[in-house]
Length: 106
Image 1: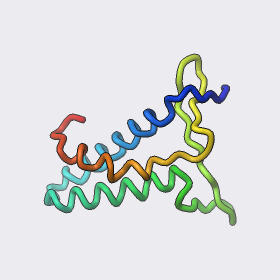
Image 2: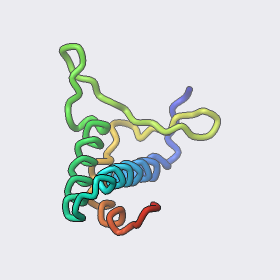
Image 3: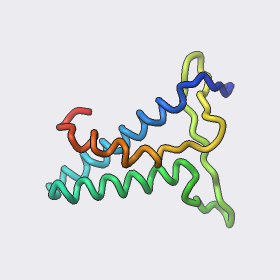
Image 4: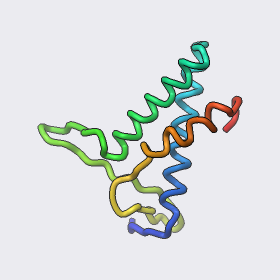
């Protein structure tokens, strides 16, 4: 597979961040948590998960650390690459209000 940078990385990572937010929100709502708790937990959990994926929070591996590099499968089996670590954690609280205002479907 070859790495490409066609300018779509940011839109892909925003879409993934939205999907993460929606999945977390859906699971927390399934236990009938109050709306305020749903919002707080959704934001906090999404921020923690995206920070791990972005390489902001350390991932311990065999006495050292691993640094994830996010890519997205695009046309012809190429991988869209942002040139370094992703920055999804920066979108969590920007996208959270939209996620919280959605009903059952994103």
